[in-house]
Image (cartoon, rainbow, N blue to C red; front, side, top):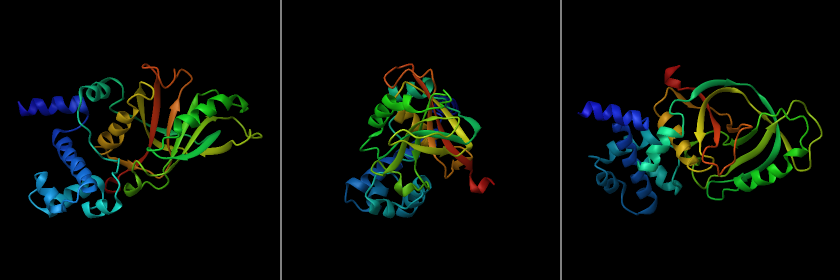
Length: 262
């Protein structure tokens, strides 16, 4: 029955059928806005909207900006997209990520490590971590809690959340007290607060699937929105490395209640 299918789909993907279909249509149409010169009306009709006005309302409901503004940016935004439900993606969602995160209150943390600027396209993060792993023994007073990867987005703005957007990355460990820093390393204070804590299994393999689920499915259907604090990953002491299929790490989304729910 339609009812049973809807329940099974939600259980398997974390998403409602109607939301997935709507966002898939919007995702595909957004790509057309960037890669073709078709009019916005034609794109709206191509994706089964009965008018440009209804398409604009639906598009803005997903991306928080109008199709015209999206086209002018010239960038495919990453947040709130929906990918094809392949067998690999379904297996990952069901087995390698926590569908419901733990809502936690995190303390402030005193961190020490290395920093770089990068983007999804450049992806300098693996090199940053490789250098940091070779040098982390130079850091004194480690709390031996594993390591922390920080992603500094600044103020979270949809029109900047693209594959080409530059962001700050830190590879760090937590320390118990201040001391003289090793050459080229910096201190970083990770601000605490309310976070959604997700588990990801599989090292770096398919981690983008986990991020997409967290930001585009769970967050979109939750009572929360992103707060203006850093996003971070925690690699516990037991972490087996980015290539191990049974490696587990945790990533944290800074959250606050949506304004309309306050």
